[in-house]
Amino acid sequence: MKISVIGTGYVGLVTGTCLAETGNEVICVDIDQEKVEKMRNGIVPIYEPHLDVLFERNIKANRLQFTTSLDEGLAHGDIIFLALPTPEDEDGSADLSYILSVSEEIGKKIKEYKVIVDKSTVPVGTAEKVQKIIAKNASCGFDVVSNPEFLREGYAVDDFLKPERIIIGASSTRAKDLMKKLYDPFVRSGNPILMMDEKSAELTKYAANAFLATKITFMNEIANYCEKVGADVDKVRAGMGTDSRIGKRFLFPGIGYGGSCFPKDVKALQKAGSDNDYDFKILDAVISVNDYQKTILAPKIEDFFDGDISGKKLAIWGLAFKPETDDIREAPSMYLMEALLKKGANLSVFDPEAMPNIKRKFGDRLTYKESMYEALEGADALVICTEWSIFRTPDFQKVASKLNQSVIFDGRNLYNVEDLKEEGFAYFSIGRNNSLI
Ligand SMILES: NC(=O)c1ccc[n+]([C@@H]2O[C@H](COP(=O)([O-])OP(=O)(O)OC[C@H]3O[C@@H](n4cnc5c(N)ncnc54)[C@H](O)[C@@H]3O)[C@@H](O)[C@H]2O)c1
Image 1 (cartoon, rainbow, N blue to C red):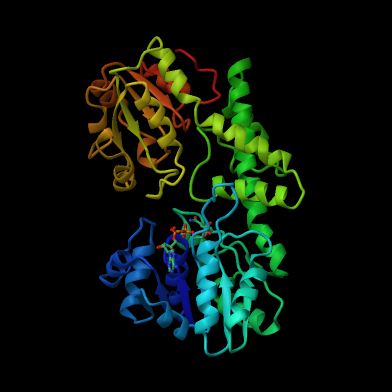
Image 2: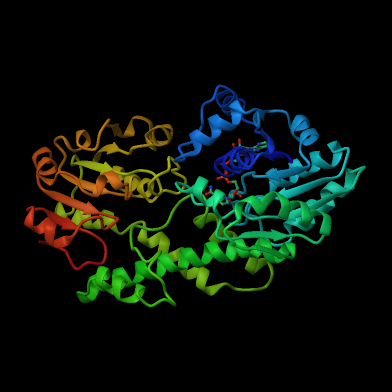
């Protein structure tokens, strides 16, 4: 099939590349000239494991092309995916301006039947809005489909190629048949393509993200409570997680959720609720607990240094909002670093992939290091913000020899408390009653 993808970010590029991988002819459109130039030169503009292999293969096979021309994209695809940003607006709602302005152009430019697929995360009623905007100018038939994306950054290629489910919100049989044909190669092992109405599809995505954010937040509260009463959240987590109704995943406490999705999606659902006369009390709590959670590590660090971290040198391991990505949107590390810088600390940082993005934001307020051990040289403590696997089993003797004193503040509970005690570290983590060893 001929496919166009408008918006070539984390979702659009993975979607375009993976659809090319199953034999479709794909054109990816992006407004960012520099990005398109890079892709034309064979460079993947984001860090996403395994994407490069598919990217190269499909470019070589002439199944994957890039352009800045919306006209070219709209002329090419029988199916047009919108993978455009839906960032948080000032009032917390999803900013639909990218989607709606491209829809306006679609109406003016399409000359034959097209299926317009909304892959971005959008509030209930967006498909209807898009339908109306296109219909205003369209001189041919078209259908609008809601097809929310569930890929996780860091595992995006695998998630797209082997999805647990595909959600299609559509009313037209023609559009449903085309979408099924497109996605059938991805569900050969029997995972479902769930057909539903557009509104339910749109809400499914928000409900899933809000639920996951709530699950993390619940564990963060349990962890905070563990610290008050002397329980160990690792043991509680293991005990809870073996209950199949709860499940083992997403029970890891930390310094708050971040990223390009959970924070804005939870807020957008809360706002959409209040716009529709529904008060999502649980989401109010999730947002406020998560805001608090992002602040919990700084006071622990300050307390250790008797309330004064001015002039202290702190090494930061991990800047991305989670491992296996270079994405720093709403990363908890940034909130913590801002708090530490404000108190006069000097920060020496390392992340395997996210340093260029952080550098664009923080500039020379941070000292950037080439390796995790280099960041430790002469630091008064190590602070961990992202659970990259290379941080999981460091050479603790080397860590101790580089630090001025053996202190670790771990926002991701990477290490065993007893092991660190044996290694002679003062080790502070989340919810493990390990205030001082
Ligand atoms: N990132 C994720 O993990 C993820 C997962 C599921 C769903 N989503 C949703 O998918 C959507 C896209 O997210 P993303 O992370 O890929 O965003 P992104 O910011 O990485 O990419 C968006 C791309 O759209 C381009 N763009 C902006 N305006 C354009 C226009 N008028 N024409 C063509 N291109 C344009 C930008 O240059 C950018 O490359 C959002 O709604 C997001 O919530 C994201």
